[in-house]
Image (cartoon, rainbow, N blue to C red):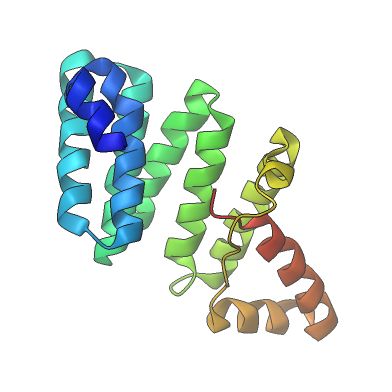
Length: 173
């Protein structure tokens, strides 16, 4: 459906930007990195020629998601760029979703930062009512390294409570 709509409106037209951002996420979920990169390139082209802040934020987040899928070391930096752009625009839901992706990318290299990012995203999603709206969504399973880090930091009982809160909030929207 996304590609059909993009064919109708033009892949590099300004109205295509949100569809391209969705297509990047869909192709990454399907495991089609090349197709995600093609959609991100079209998004970059729109951002470069139109100079719209929202499109630039979508493009930055898309580049970060692709970097994460590629396992690149600059993933966190790229996602943080997208997150900051969304935050500056007041796009709270997009910022929270990008923060979730940031938490995923930090889960192995920096478990404490991953937990903090997930908690912050959880707070924002709750404030927006998005946790209730996404109650049927798939929950992210935090890696063992994050669970171990939280356990060391707070003890097993606190770990269980913290993980319950974080995984409840850590919905794939």
